[in-house]
Length: 272
Image 1 (spheres, rainbow, N blue to C red):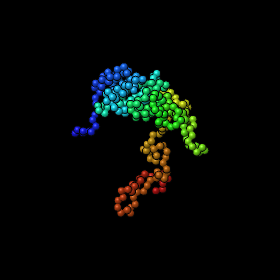
Image 2 (cartoon, rainbow, N blue to C red):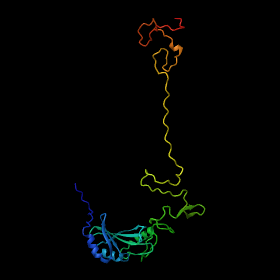
Image 3 (cartoon, rainbow, N blue to C red):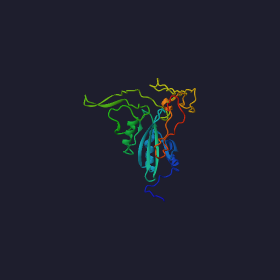
């Protein structure tokens, strides 16, 4: 059974890469198709012109998102990614530029007013500057926040912590104090331990294996019951238990299968 959905499928990438690469010309740094997406890297100072060309000349009318990526090992450690959607072609592309902490990226609020909030978010999380932005300030973190949380070198605990002070009757900011040093767990799964001794585990030793149980002592006399009045362990049985027993009473009117038979053997000391 075929289900017809009201939303059409995204258009194929066939021919898109060559067409847009030729249109961007000198503004284009690199172009490739990866994971089903068309990725176009343009010069940082030409990003506004490149996006205007894609919007007006190739019908990528909508700016869906601006995302930041941090690569600390690169000289230009930050990538700013613009995700564009063509409503008429039903197709998406990603345009990227590279920058560092000090070099601003031209704003695109002149093309899409919604870029104002997107650029503020990238600035807040990564610290990327946008030249020409009308109101470049933090949008997600609190007033007076230190640092940019999405940078790879930002500490997991942050720089300050806040709490409500009963004495001051307000929220106060204080340096982070940890009761225990942050421990680094760099193994791939919780079932695999690190190859080195973690801090605090220096005195931990493996528990010794339990000792093997002692063998049972050997018995000089085998455990048998062939002799009368033997218990099987070499000791005489109780004298009372070795005495003969009487047979079934003669007055019994019927057979009693459970009654013991009369003992014919005489036992010393018995007057019977």
